[in-house]
Image 1 (cartoon, rainbow, N blue to C red):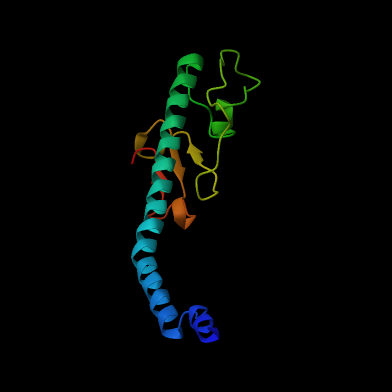
Image 2 (tube, helix red, strand yellow):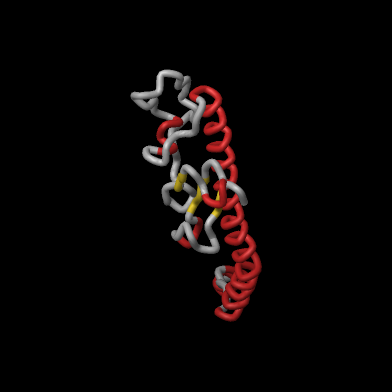
Length: 139
């Protein structure tokens, strides 16, 4: 009778545990790259959506005031009324000017490059507004 109890209380062998760990490792190796790749694409999509939101707010600002905000203070004028702007009917953004998904500030230039009226850009993952990972309003 005691011998039956000892056999029932038996645990997993080291080989069985190693097989399970290898299987879990293989699954993680296939799933992790797809998961983390999706996160990067999501950040780019969020950035493009935020830039599009800024563009709409800038257009509304221009309709109300007759011009786009100056480069300084820039996008803040979409949320806080400038002291010298009586036709401002904002705020044009609901929650102020957010940082991009990588924690960097958006860059607003007025006038923009190549004859554009303005330009909004995010440094992207690289952290450099001039890098290849930069996301711009005309992209």
